[in-house]
Length: 194
Image 1 (tube, rainbow, N blue to C red):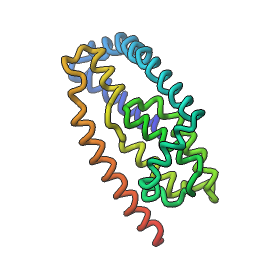
Image 2 (cartoon, helix red, strand yellow):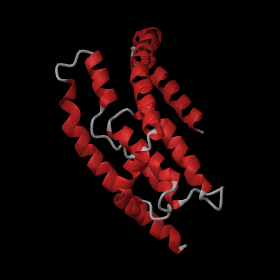
Image 3 (cartoon, one colour):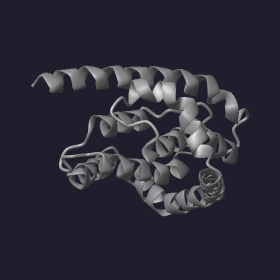
């Protein structure tokens, strides 16, 4: 389905550019953009590798368990269905910590491990649990305090003050996270009544 939607966007964009006389712009973008994307991707790999390594070391040193214990009072409210001490809490803590540091690509493996671990608690494998949905909402809300990846890209493109976005990022995180969790709770209560 998403492939069709994106296909329609691309076709409409190309047709619009030709009808408005901007066909040359599309040609230039098709030729130049892939190398630019490759440069961005290659510049982000070291950042992802470092943080993935640090988080694996933290897991082996049981720091993820300690982070989960620090976040436990908050997790009891947000994830009431997860038993205390379950391994998914450590993965959720790591995922959220890395997201807060703004290295979203490096948090993906921990998010996948958290979902796999949460699925072990799931009695009906065809339907996501309350905790799985809440975790997805948190990830989609973009919990970010320091947008490291965006700051790196802004710096790469010569921004005068790459960190200028910090206050905006923190404000957006607070609003989207609270709004996401409130909607999650409202929909859960509505769904539970059915």
